[in-house]
Length: 219
Image (cartoon, rainbow, N blue to C red):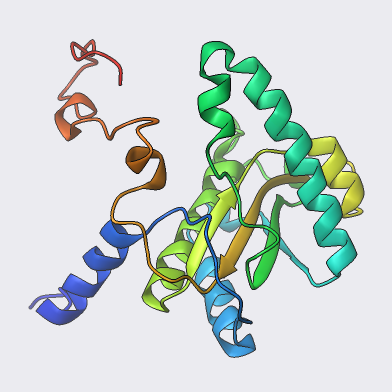
């Protein structure tokens, strides 16, 4: 007895994983409501510690709010650039978001009152964030399978975003997701194409039995 998917389905899973890209370039066009709902359902079926399901999604449909969110990201982009020192100019040449071009903009946040959940979080409280990241990854892979681009924007002041989206004080925004149609997917991750960084060799990230010091130079 085997529980393995057939070869075609297995190949499709790996294709979505390896062809997923953090997209920043979008073309005009709305995302079909039924498609968006499929993406949200995929996200909502992610694993979560203690089955707490800490993710909350806010769909941004108000054009004025989208512009205010974009302005918040732009302010943080400038601050981040200044903090990068000698790489400041290089960073400012990068396109880091597509918030004004994408068909859909979603904010992802951690739920309020999540401190009540201690199953799996007593010693690792950050597992709520790990769980929400799994939901985002589910959505990313589903978007790639649907032929849609998706980009994760994290350049923002948490308190400012919380206020713009009228979140309770104990909720925490963790992502702005740009979703939409694209002309093409990047052949490689964009930051690799732009020579900002390269993917580390797998063997430098996999140890056996005990920690091993990384003998390879940082990229």
